Image 1 (cartoon, rainbow, N blue to C red):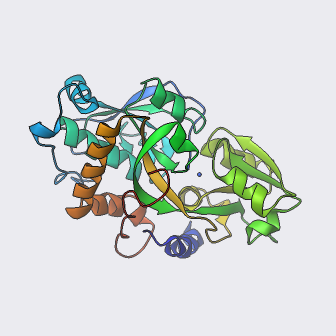
Image 2 (spheres, rainbow, N blue to C red):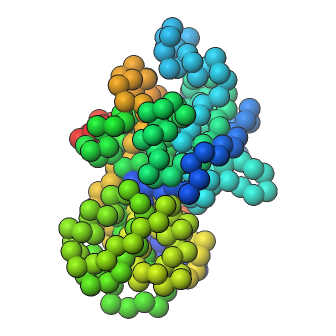
Length: 309
């Protein structure tokens, strides 16, 4: 499991020089997320495995994807270090994006993906109606969500933290949010946590991480509660932001799948075990989140270790 304290410590250092669950406000657009190249990061997927022919069962979701020739991923185009479109190359890069490419390579033989730009409040619908095959989008596993979608994993663990405009004082814990206007992403785990830990806070919600950051900078709230991984990435690219609290939850990320497809879930979990064992997971982390967090790659969380997975 990743050390979220280590992320916070490095974020503080990084910000001296510089959520489950970002989305965007457009759920229907799609862009190529990878091609026949080995994906973002100088051959980071070179040793990514390819499934044996016997693992692509007749009539399965895996066979459908392989015949189509691309994996359709519900994800983001604007989440730094996680899933962000490079304006120069058009390539979608980051931890979630490259894991999606690695899964595509496992099924198809090449890292060919198409990313459907999802919002946090539309992911369940995109899976249930078959618009996407999987969701890679800092998608926190909860028992409530698991009633609507299936989750492979968890494949990463983070936690909620608090960001403010640089120079803001008096906020260093969730309890400090009482009586204040607080920003959160729509349909994210931040909302019930704020209600629980700061019941007098006024919560205002926006569709995705960029909108929340913009609202914070416009003083539409004094703090933004979101997954620490995203806040660290936001603060890296925007010196106006500051992460002021250590994570106060444990948020395991899962790969969203269509509910009831146990065969595909087992297949994806087997793939996760393989890329963790052969170092691909670690290489993808080092090439994305590991460019901000010092030290070796964390130990991935145990698959099936949380309720709903």
